[in-house]
Image (cartoon, rainbow, N blue to C red; front, side, top):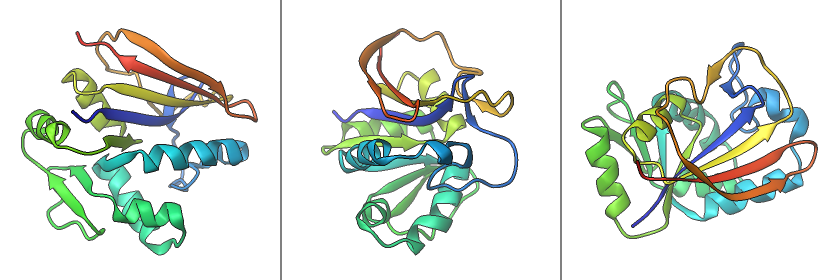
Length: 187
């Protein structure tokens, strides 16, 4: 069975999306000063270990506007992977190999997890991640914790259920960024 892995850039105060102008989806605005080769290598390995992406509508829209215009190995992988978008309003996604999940999210994700292949990666997509956590469908959380306090914005753990987590890995990612990987224990 494939795992659902939620991967987030997160501030020390739990913000995953800061308020303000639209951010750069390649580096997520406030994270840019900390971007480095160690982070790039981690994100590369993470993406190539996945067999599909599961995205919320807002993340999908930003990614679909940016990634098809890029040309490198990472962009080719992003553009080529199957993408499942949780949305009640999107009907005809234009980004290559994109499929809308508009019905019962939990049953659809359970079916996706049961398919053979590599794990399913969720980038960003805070509302979707919260819904997946509430449904008990997330297997792993991967946080790249940035040494900043943003004070406002969308917080990852705002309305999530009680979670028991087992540490898989902690690692210094240079420039003050720390990787925290957790297995989510079944309720």
